Length: 453
Image (cartoon, rainbow, N blue to C red; front, top):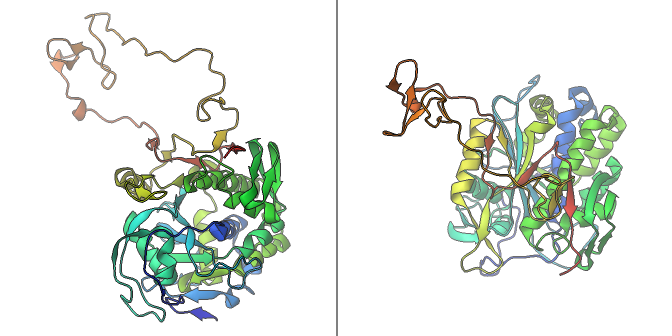
């Protein structure tokens, strides 16, 4: 089995800085790895074994230094929660397309988390332009603490300072999530996987024209495969405000459509098609050592095979404009902590807002997140009044509120009631703050491209 040491990256010969941006973000090929993960999850153990048995032996692997041991033979699922970091590399080395740019950045960073009860799956996209602290990272030959910790660097530079292990350690420190599995993919697989899928159907509210990505798509439904799929995933100028957060939300439209296609089609029951999908992705992958086995892939399949579409979520890590680094982002720690606390709890949640450049199907054009064509503007409801006392009824307890004290009173006893002592009502899934945007896999959404720059 081929093996990369923990830092198969040459030591940088230039001063470290945060201004690392590539004009062509081919790292979006990471979506291939997510695709293969979904294929594994939905196709069942027998098909997985058939498709992967001859492929995993050729995988490149890397030692994270802290990963869990591999699953044992016969394991039907992962024990407890599952967190996998999926990184997209923009290296041109050995790729079919090469514009002469050198080096390697982790331009796409996805954190896939499955709850301990295996009922919820969430993919968190972390913008490459985030400015974050770096822990100390291993060197080119796995030397511990070769690169010292830094107070702030651009997230997509982590691959230069210790490879995939450094990216995993940085994102683990940022999110508070224990990352014991990780994978990396280059961009060649996007074309192969999208072709093996037969394309993914994505709707556009208007045409997308992006000369920088050589992309020109008409409004309406488009079947994206091959280079068109890759260009759609990498376009910045063609969606939203032209920034990385807009591109992420555009990619979420593609990913949700891809998941629905895999769920609805019969292609995963065809071992020949599953093999083609797996081969296109795996030939361009590097995985942590504990992932590179049929047993692990079978266990992943058992872990997520029964998750419903409405329990698969794509969300974007919350951020805001950096105070002094133009074009960069700073983490919104408060909202991010809330997001990851919810993920760790395993409780279902609802995303209340979509990202820039996304429109829900049937939504009002002026407000893509709003229901279509409201007949009347919403007005506040008048408070309910208790007919016996004439007092306003407390919405939490259902008891009338004594106007002299402002405390609810139980009519049966005439005594004041402390709402904190009453049984709490199940209010359903937690609603995320508006600044955490995303999509559920069962939500039909369109890309709201732009033609004016």
